[in-house]
Amino acid sequence: MCSFLSVLACVYVPLFVLQYQVGQLFSVAEASKNETGGGDGIEVLKNEPYEENGVKGQYTHKIYHLKSKVPGWIDRLSPKDSLVFHEKAWNAYPYCRTSESNEYMKDNFFIKIETWHKPDLGNAENVHNLDSETWKNVAVVPIDIADRSQVSASDYKMEEDPALFKSVKTGRGPLSPIWKQELVSNADCPKMCAYKLVTVKFKWWGLQTRVESFIHEQEKRIFTNFHRQLFCWIDKWVDLTMEDIRRMEAETQAELDQVRSLKRPREHQPFRFISSFLEAEKNIRFSKFL
Image (cartoon, rainbow, N blue to C red; front, side, top):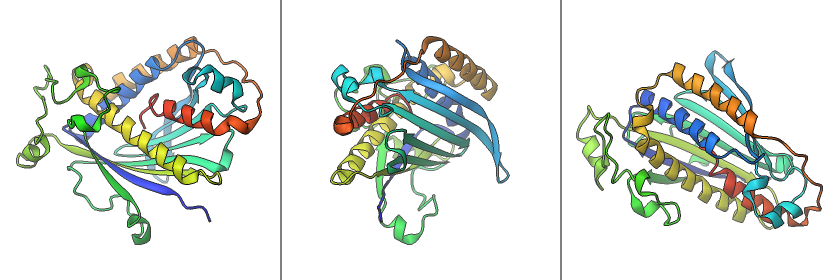
């Protein structure tokens, strides 16, 4: 039986839970526009309301075309469909679920991200209600968006540093090294935690553990960078409504459809698939958030 590697990332943010929803969707739309161009990028197939077992939310289905995100030699040697990823998301905020698959790997690969957004600073226990055997094997990774040491030198941007940023509209920031402790002592201050349970399956003999660990490292990196950006963009989205967001998403989808032109991928032998998969997966994690 194949075992899966699960990690719980706890992302602390000085926002209200409902406020975060707008900021998250705004930032995802902005990132999507930034990542599409030159005939490649993100294709939005569906973005529509759904209802399942009495729960209502928003369903999205996106395809990530990553030919332009990898070196040319990897593209030339990549098997057909190895650089095409499908992402399906069910956003019933404050709970969200996302699944990611690859057409070449089929059932041998998936990434599942389940997120609960709670008005606390990570002190809730087992918010995903896992059975005791599963829960004891889950690694918990805290992410502090103001902690400079959690960001690599290559990723660091001064304008997206919560330890330096000061919001004009809300007055929030800059975040001190003890900002979480300061919020705990003030019940009126906005605070929340995104509990992101990430489960990865990569079934490939001899490489499963290494690749699954690699993907989890990329997940932590994107969660950290995205939330730093989200907070530092607060003056761009704090006045928006959900109606504004849906209109923005529709406009973004139209822009993506206009600039992206699909080309039929070339057929190649799969002997270089692992290197191309790793490069593509690394890039997809920085093309998206959920």
